[in-house]
Image (cartoon, rainbow, N blue to C red):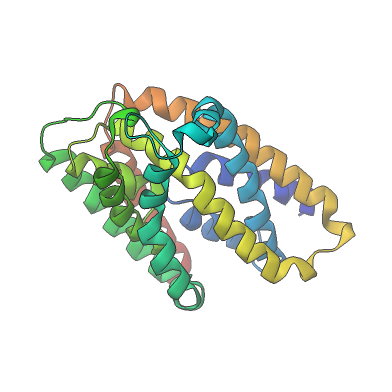
Amino acid sequence: MDQNIIAFILGIVEGATEFLPVSSTGHMIIVGDFLGFSDEKAGVFEVFIQLGAILSVFLLYREKFMTMLKRENWTRRNGLSLVHIFFGMLPAMVIGFFGHSFIKNVLFSPFTVIIGLLAGSVFMLCAERFHPDIRVNRVDRLSIWQCLQIGFFQVLSLWPGFSRSGSTIAGGLWLGVSRKAAADFSFIMAVPIMLIACTYDFLKIADQLAWSDFLMFVIGFVTAFVVAYASIVWFLKFLNKSSLASFAYYRIVIALIALWYFYL
């Protein structure tokens, strides 16, 4: 298959799954393997197109980012601030830094992703069924302590297949935070943490880039950006009326498909 068509398909997969609670890693592994695109170039490509997905979040939440970046708002307590984002990022950044090699070398396999998909599904269903009463309905009302607690739930997403948005939104529910408020915080927090992680990975593998791949990378980047933007807008509207249960059941189906495809 032509590499530009592969780039377009994977851009759609990345954009559609990166911020939904379905695990972009699981989908990229399955689809990439099915398309025969799982070599070293594939690793570089997947890191690069994530930057397109990150850009879509920044544009959607640009007003909140611009407000937080104003000097007088860096440490404000009334509303979201850089301090809230920092403490939300802290647990995953610390554990991700020290466990980076283990995560990349040991946990990135079809089998571990299947485990992550199933475990994340159970976690989301339990959160929907047993969460306490909702006390926080807006992201601007999150406390620093609540942001840190959501950050600890985000650590679960370091296991491929668990899903960053799934772990943080379900974690938010356990803390009495609404799905929409937890999703907003998850997406805003994803920009710096993904940017740092992608930049770190990209610098390690940048020497593998070739000018002959330029068009392919641009197609994947733009496609991921457009599809991610649309998927986030849809998902936030969906959360106003529905629960995470349908995503949990979908993840179980994907895990079973992956189990059949890779091992049966």
